[in-house]
Length: 426
Image (cartoon, rainbow, N blue to C red; front, side, top):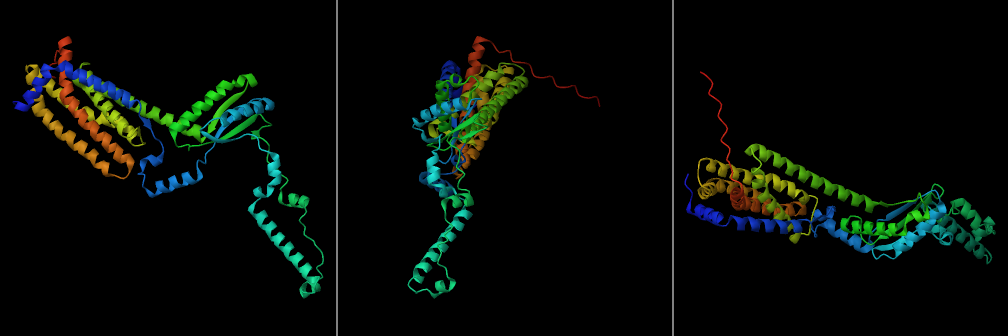
């Protein structure tokens, strides 16, 4: 099949400037890498929904009214209670100086609980005490009225006593109000002491949680727990530490899964083309496209959500088809004895056109997700559609240019086609 004039013009451009094309692609890949490395992963489910969703609006209103309701815990363990308390006082003082911590709870004042014990009584006890106070007030009123002869019922009952049964000692014993909470948050006779802190932001803000944990860990290390006791162990616990660990685990899973997919692609491409030269020819343009798409995602969104975080592996899996088909056709044309320019022109006019249909249809499928209110799909659609288009263009232009650059340095001995099996005898 002869190439079209447009295919010849593109082939001529690639033949004249293969080094410049590869250099521009490399520069684009480097810029994309630095942009992609700044991408974070927002694990909060709120990031998957639009800002005007009713549940998100109510959640934001609740946060604005109540603030953060999650605590961070610093656990101090050693055989010495005195040293645990000493270190707890030191780290509590350090936490109180932080702008990202609202308040710290370490030592509770017993006088406050003694003066406000009824605030911590059970509801049933409070209702019973309320009933008894009402009965006592009514008894006193009847007694006062009976003194003037205005309450025959009180006179008939002879209720002249002031039997209130509201003595403080009896009330404490009756309702368990003599049980004061411990002065410190401790367990196992002080071998474990806990310092509670209420940060200013919620535990679902992974970036905040990581910075907070890192800062507190630096404060702990700066106090040198071993100076207080050689066996002292200090850990950061609670939802902030758990969410940070979960985010790190998810990122490791995404990276390991993407690397596994990338490595598998390396093996498949090398086996299919029966040579290692095909590996960079297919995967370098593809990686440039993926990194460019991720860099654009960083510019637009700043971070990925739980759904769009897997776009790297998805784009690799879908985008490799373009490079594989174009390289296979270019190899076949070179095998037929065509020079570089003619082989590229025929490849662009034939496989390039048919592959464009597949690329555009796949990109269109991604773009249709943009209209979804579910932000996980809409962001995925933008990044995926862009990645597919760039992967196709990179395979169509960068791959042949890279093939020419490599062939100038190391001539490509195109492998002969596999011999067809002999026909079976009739």
